[in-house]
Structure formats: structure tokens, C-alpha cells
Image (cartoon, rainbow over all chains, first blue to last red; front, side):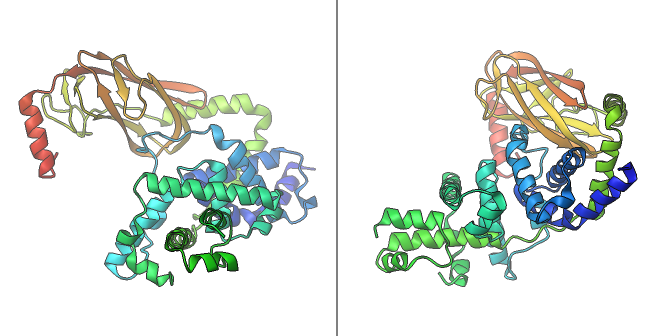
Amino acid sequence: MANDERAGKFDMLVRPHLAALYRFAYRLTGRNEDAEDLVQDLMVRLYRSDQDLDKVDALRPWLLRSLHNLYIDEWRRKRRSPFGHLDAQPWEELLENTPGTVNPEQAAQSDALRRQVLDALYRLGREHRALLVLHDMEGRSLPELAELLKLPVGTLKSRLFRARRKLRGALEKGNHLTLSDVIPDEASEYGL
Amino acid sequence: MDCNRVHHSIDSGSLDNPAPEVLEHLASCRACDEALRRARVVLETLRGLPEPPVPAGYAERVLGFTQAAVYYQHRQRRAAWAWGLGLAAALLLGLGIGLGMEGTPDAGQIDSGYQVHDGIVMVPVGSVTEVHLALDAGRPIHGVGFVINIPAGMELQGHPGEHRVAWTGELVQGRNILNLPLVVTSGAAGTLEADLHFAGRENTLKVQVQAVEDSALQGLVRRLLARIGLG
């Protein structure tokens, strides 16, 4: 197949899924540049491989799984600054422009809570973080994830258990979550 | 159902629709009810995050780079070399010390807890001092490998006993400030090196660091400034 023809076909197949891949990558990495890098890395690998994308059933889930696996398996070696000064905080660029509630006091409390939860989330291992992104952040069910990731529900359930425990541990370790002090009004909003 | 099983259920199942036996337990157990409430607040926080907007030009950027990368695959080594040269030309590495990023810092002026005399950073003993390295990049650069080599008698906060700390990061276009939380012991002196690796190339920034005993007066001034929010 000629280069132009191959490029055109690749473009046609993946372009409709790039936005979904970016959003997933952003949730995994918490940063715009890392999200773009991750998707870019996946695209280059796919293009270089002999994988015939038009023969893949349900291409979007397949691409999302590929992105997930690339993030878990390959990006492990990529370490971020241990001091955090060269890297923006996770979701920083988005949260700056997205107040949580109308009431300024509540907005500040809500913003603080969001930053605390995100800080804890991005201190987890990639595998646990990815599962919390898919299940808790994106709201996918365990059977859906079993299909998406090609893993048994039981495996995902025990992994979710460990991930939530670790998230809670990370929040409590940093004295981050003091619900009664921080968000008494929000708690009632949730009907709790 | 006992508390352990309820906690296990909370951590591994749906928080929206707890099982009837869990609800039954919650009705009579305040601790488990509180645990579910906390878990739900965390969940709602995650669910309430805004949807990341796709940056302008993202699809064109990704697809364009992908095809270019593969097109030049057969010339990969030469292309990588050329890219490295391009980056070297684009990357202007500078070293600034202190908060005065305009150029030479004022000798004797206390900047963020340390002084500079004749180009040597004088770091007080017994406290964490952030030493600032300024890196000027002509363009954004991804995948830069940072290696900090720390002389004997010094360490970075959070890395006790480590004389080499490495990670991967990015440089944004313009000035990047790398803040190194340095702890020095009495009498320590040496060269702190920051190695930057990108595209097969390497650049090293060196800064002389010397430990100084914090005088009682300086310590008092610093504490007073800190108390009124100026330190």
C-alpha cells in the first residue's frame, strides 16, 4: 500500500476516536502535555505496527484498552519530578477555570477537596489509578470494564478494593479528608 | 453482616446501590454509615470533575507527527541526530541563582534563605534551603531526563542519603525554575550538578555550594520575617 493511501486510511480510522483517547489519557496522567504524549506514543506504535485496524472489532474499546495497557506497562519507567516544581499539579489548568459551586465559601471548600482527592489519586500506582479513573471517575461498571480490559470481574473487584483502600489511606495519611470540617454543606447536598 | 464485610463491600462494590444486607447493617452502625458517607463524597468528587476539553489542533498535531515519524523511520538515526542538533540550537540553558532571575544576584542579599558570594551559593546549616536553578528553553521540550548529583555532606529533602536523584520531565518554552530543597551538614562544600538529557544529548549545569553556620542574628531576622509573612 502506498504511503499516502496508508496514511489516509489510518487517519480515517483513528481520527473519530482521538478525542476519547485524549480525555482518557488526561484522566490517567492529569496533565495536558502528558496526555498528548501518551496518545502520540500510541499512534506512532500503531502506525509502525502491522496491526490492521480496519479488521479490529469495536475499534474504540480496543484503542482505549491499548492506551490503558501502554500507560500501565510502558510508562512505568517514566518518572516525574520528585519535587513537582517543573510540573503543573494534576488537573491544574482545568480546575483553575472551573469553580465547584456558586457560593464562594463553598467553592473554595469544594476546590480544596477536589485538589486533595486528585493529589491522593495521582500518588497511587498507575494500575490502581487507572481503575479508579475508569470505574469511579468515568462511571463504568465492573462488567463493562471486564469487557473493555479483558480481565475477569473478580480480578477487577479485588483490584478496586485495593485501589479504594489505598486512595483512602493516601487521603488520611496527609490529613487530607476531614469531611466534617471541610464540606459539611456538600455532604448534605449528596443526601448523606 | 459484620463491620469488616460491610467495609469490604463499600470498597469493592457500587456505592450508589449498596446491597440490602449492607443497608440493614448501616441502619444500626454509625461507624460504617460514616465510612460509606466518606466514600461517597470522594466518589462524587471524582465524578464531578470537568470533562477535559480537547486542545485546539490536537488531532492534526498527533496525526501529523505520527505520519512524519514513520515516514522518516528508515532514516531514524540521522533524523534523531538532526533533531538533537535542532534541540541543542533551540535550547538555551542558563543558570540563575536566587530569586533575582534577571542576572547576577546581589552579593550578600538573602534570597529564599541563602546568600551568594563570588558565585558560590552559601547554604545555612540545619534547615531546608531551596536552591533555584533557572533553565531557559527556546521551545517546549518533552522527555527531558534530569539527574541531580549531590556532593557529600548534602542531600535533597525527601531523598536521605541519595547522592543521585533522577526523573523525567518537561521544559516549557521560556524560563523554567527547578527548586532543589537542599539540606547541608556543617563544613560541607562541593559542586552540585544538574545533568539534562534529551535526544541523546547531555548538558550539565554546575553550581558551587558551601555550608555556612547560620548566625544567630540572621536566624532571628529570618524567623521575624517569616512570622510577618515576608520570609
